[in-house]
Amino acid sequence: MKKSGIHTLDQRIYRREFIHYAGTSALMLPALSLLSGCGGKENQSSEKTEATDASGDRQLGIALVGLGNYSEGQLGPALKETKLCRLAGIVTGTPEKAEKWKKEYGIPDQNVYNYQTFDQIKDNPEIDIVYVVLPNAMHAEYTIRAAQAGKHVICEKPMATTSADCKKMIDACNQAGKKLGIGYRLHFEPHNLEMMRLGQQLEFGQVKRIIAQNGQKQGNDTPWRFDKELSGGGPLPDVGIYCIQGAIYTKGQVPVSVTARYHPVTDQEKFSEVEEGMDFQMQFEDGSVADCKTSYNDKYNLLRAEAANGWFELDPAYPYDGLKGRTSRGPMDIENINQQARQMDAFAASIINNAENPVTGEMGMRDVQLIEAIYQAADSGRKISTTQVVKVLDHYQTA
Ligand code: NAD
Image 1 (cartoon, rainbow, N blue to C red):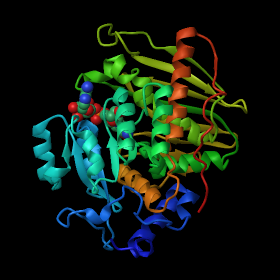
Image 2: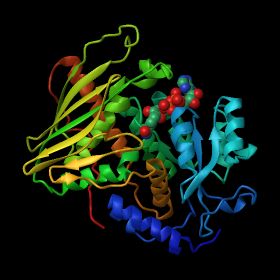
Image 3: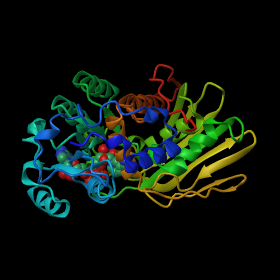
Image 4: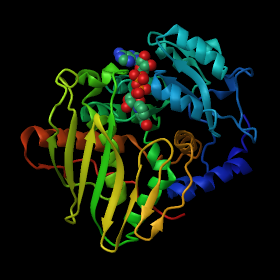
């Protein structure tokens, strides 16, 4: 393996870009261990499947676990654009899918696993990172098993269906000395980073009210989403989580309490286990609030902040592409980028630079704790204190 990686032009360009958008000072740390110690035995890799980036450095290998809609539609294609990592392996229970992916991505037989052979991934030096893209209730088990196999882990949102599971996942990764990141792609998306900057740096004065709405007409193509055991809930943990995230990173504070109420159920059969929709409010220490709405039966996609001296908003705020922003001073002129490629490269960079990644397991746990509090508020009709949730924030900093 070539050791000069972090000094190459390609990676320096990437690092500067990332710092510009994310303002994450941790990434400015010098590389402490370029690729060594992040999955281990790179030198054993076969020459045939070893891949390098433009500057000749080895790209970290990612194995996707679960080849459903998100892997097929977004993560696989994004891994064709990443600079610091590449798709090296797959884990699937469906042999036909394995054949299709092997062909499309040039994955060798020895890097294809099923759920029975998954743990053997520990012996594969080409896999540095396991990316868990399974139904929510399966995130904990596969994250823990991946850490025990000596791999870094990216886990999709919501991190788990209970905060107790989140704690076990964090502990397992810490014990294994491996990094854990959550698939919060919008932390790497320039429009959302601008909301973070405008809100946290008080560009329009104190943010007094946030309106965050994310709802979609959810079809029946992924039945696990309506199965409480597998999903942990309906739209709240699935798409409402973006409202929780958006409000917190725009305000730059973790709420101190929440109130909530369920939407009326219009389809009893479809929504026999999970909620159809929900309104919830998060209250912050300074008296400001975030009014949030989420649904599986209505479309909305908004993140808006009303501040002392103006307003700023994204509409739509959370899709993979086509985001648009405006402020009371005029439109935001910001480019849409490949969010997932940026997110996975940032995680790879955190391994290469031995730096903290901005979307930690603790952040994932914070949001699951808030989801639990919101359900408690809706079930009881009471205001629920959230002062005990993990106080983790993504502070916007200028480079
Ligand atoms: P999906 O149903 O399309 O894919 C799930 C995959 O898990 C399938 O390949 C399925 O075969 C496999 N699987 C293994 N065991 C299963 C079981 N017991 N029941 C059902 N499926 C099983 O779902 P998806 O939309 O790809 O979502 C997967 C994960 O990704 C979820 O956690 C979801 O929240 C997350 N996700 C994130 C984003 C994002 O923007 N970050 C977008 C979509 C989905």
